[in-house]
Length: 383
Image (cartoon, rainbow, N blue to C red; front, side, top):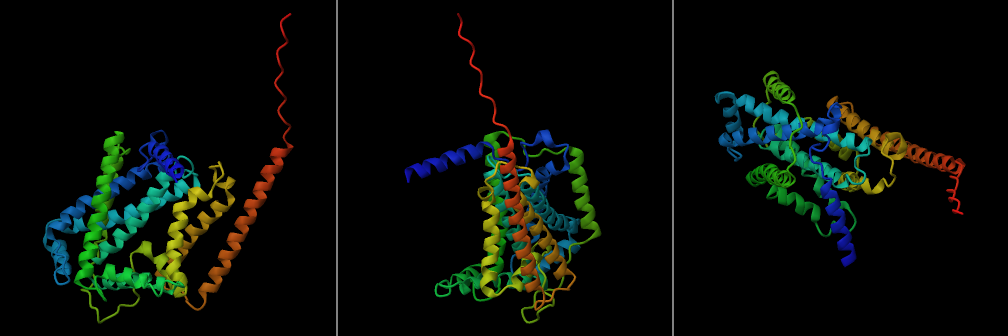
């Protein structure tokens, strides 16, 4: 046991030295637009935090006051609409930039040694950003937020469908903790407000400690780029005012019930599955993402040299876009789609595995066909 702990400490120490939170160590690659994404993650995060602090001045975290306080902020406070818009679209930008960086690291093989810890923190940050997102838009306490939150919080109850878990009631217990009771109400709003605020504060403090200790530069972006991004967010906030919707009504269900765009694909996946798999699937997706560096044991970083992982990455991206489109365009058919999607998934994974095996055999055959290096000639002894 001591040896295992010693190896773990050594692993963490080595990965900490190569930790890269916002591409702050990629200064030599800044000519590539994909390597300014890390800086954009930090910038959008700061926009969300700063505007969120301003919003707290007027926000009233009660079921009777939340909607009115945001309406007052938007319509009566000078530039309140701008602050709220930049908070919303800054949060969207945060999710988008984290997602782009994840796919860049995935296809470029940057999660390999010594980048495993950077990858795991980045992937966990996407999960936390999505949790912060769902708790955040619920704070409006309008119809869309109320019913989307209620739908999402039914997912933990599916864990009770797992054999052996039902008797423990863990799924309903998780839902009860977040709800603060048997249904959405004041306790739910209080919990969501605390989680939404706490995630940003806690991880901002941890990030600042990291930068203080490493003396690294947080933001590898020019002032021109920063200005363009902030101007773009301000323009979008003006052109597309953040919607208010209607005050939450527990007795009237809106159709369709839609969450924020980055939850739509997962929401559709859960709808396609029976309760048992609907409870397992989100955990499997997160688990796969976290352990990818330990599954891909090759030293290759080029995408086509890792056929199986390349295909899985492309397929995951295609499914995300496809499921989102299905639900946004309202063309999904629950009775028709699941068997088709399952069949496509089996075919794609099978072909990916076959491509991986063929590729490995070709590499092995190529290595075997190369002539062995000639032995080094020993110098003649001096007479």
